[in-house]
Length: 239
Image 1 (cartoon, helix red, strand yellow):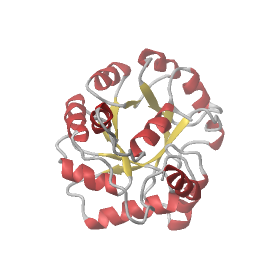
Image 2 (cartoon, rainbow, N blue to C red; image 1 turned 120 degrees about the horizontal axis):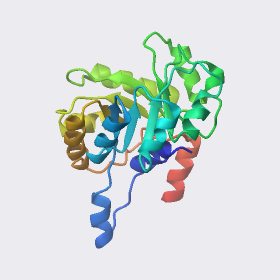
Image 3 (cartoon, rainbow, N blue to C red; image 1 turned 180 degrees about the vertical axis):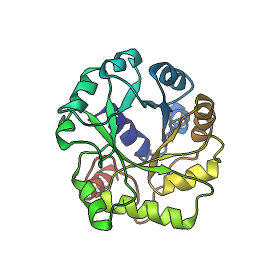
């Protein structure tokens, strides 16, 4: 499991009420992953300093990952060369972001690398459903422009229902806490921004979100890389 997948799993876990010092600690736990989209490793390091949980370098050579040691770092790759994902992992990157319309299947064979897929807008329902069988840390659904409408919520819920994968979306730095909470309720686990100042603002907003509420039906809680039936069994064990 990649560090990104592990981070997603931690923020989507429903925490039980704690007593004493445990209660104070639980209140500080984040419920969303904040990612920075950087143009280079210097920009990525600044975003991590300002509170990003993970960073993505838009254009980087595999060995550039070593400059981000100690940070959950990803790279956008073309996916043209065989074992390209493996080369980036060995260079210090934890995960890669790719376009399924462009990347070669032979570039993404490394099972130790984390994968984030940019969801094409032209996929039909049958194509989207096939993504459930892929090893993906998250699915990037693109930017959330303007107010989050109920129709957009329906689309996000539909994507999650068909894939059972955590969703990743780009947001603006001035998004409100209520809007972020609404996104979180539609299974958007990772929010991303491409400016360091936006990362700093989003960090404060995310840290101020209320804890995740357990849903009555128990079916809408995001699960990181875990089949639906297993997720239900895990909840039973917790209870």
